[in-house]
Image (cartoon, rainbow, N blue to C red; front, top):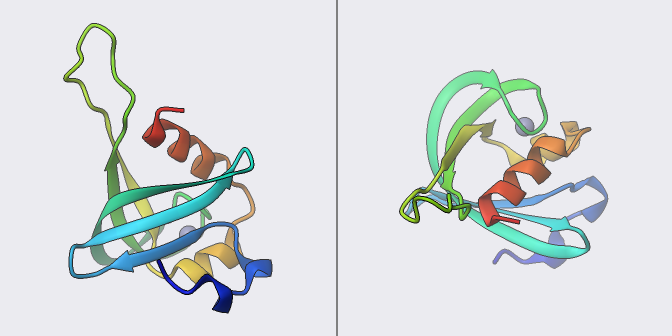
Length: 112
Ligand SMILES: [Zn+2]
């Protein structure tokens, strides 16, 4: 966990940090009054594309996570969700105006 006390909460919608050694990105968000977090596989692209969280074009990384949602008929089924996200999370937080994708993504990932 990063030191949360140094982060300016007024500009934050979600919390995110990268573990570059394992190529993982962590996203933490307050959903229904509870802090929830997910861990994503994170692949830098050094390309410009539309970020799925803030819908602005910028330098993005590809991130993917395996959801906990299971199909009843096939217990081995895991759905993987992947999308582009801003490389710079603090810029992303400043631009984000709609959290519907973020909340849907978190709910799907956590099987909520
Ligand atoms: Zn973004």
